[in-house]
Length: 235
Image (cartoon, rainbow, N blue to C red):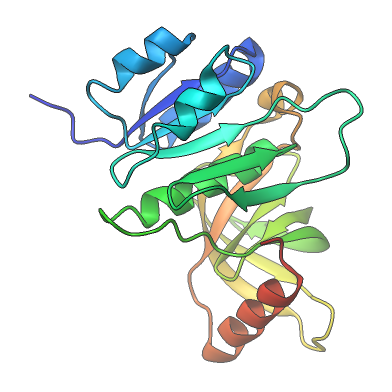
C-alpha cells in the first residue's frame, strides 16, 4: 500500500549535516530519501516528493532545483557559503515555488519545512511566516521542573528555544519570557513539535533545543507577537 506520509528528498553531500537533518525530519514523521547526484534527483522526480532540499554543492543541483519547483514539489535550495561569506541569514523568494537559504541553521531549515508542509495546497504560493532572531531569555517549565533557555528564533505562533536538555516531541511546557516594548511577561503554554538533540548540535552548527507551538495565545498576546515579528522579523 502506498505511504500516506509526506515525502522529502534531502540532496546534500555533507554527510554529518545530512544525517542529522534526515534524523530530525524522520522523527517529525516525514518519509525521507537522500539522492546524492543530479541523476539520482531526477529519478526521485518520477514519483515527486512534496519537497526537495538541494545543496548547490551537488554538480548541476542548482539548475536542476530551479527547474523542479512546482505546486506539487516545493524546493529549498541551499547554498554552500564561501569561507568569507557575508553575515547574511535569511530566505529570499526566487520564484513562487523556490526558496533560497543563505547561511541558514537547522532550526531555520526545519521551521521552513514545516511552513511549506502547512501551506501545501496545490496552486498556492508558498507562505512563510515572518521570524525574528532571538536572544531573549526564557524560563521553561516541563513536568513541574523549571530550566533556563534562550529563544533562538521567534514567530507569531511559536519559537525555537535553546535548551541544554530539550524535552521530547509532544511534551507540553510553559514558557515565561519578555520582549522589548512590552511591560508584562508572556506566560504561554506550548507544545514541543521537534527537537535538536545535544549529540546532533555540532554536526548541524546549531544549539540543542526544541521547536514549540504556542497553544493558548490570548487575542492581546497574538496581536503583540504578530506586530513584533512583522516589524522586526527577517522577511
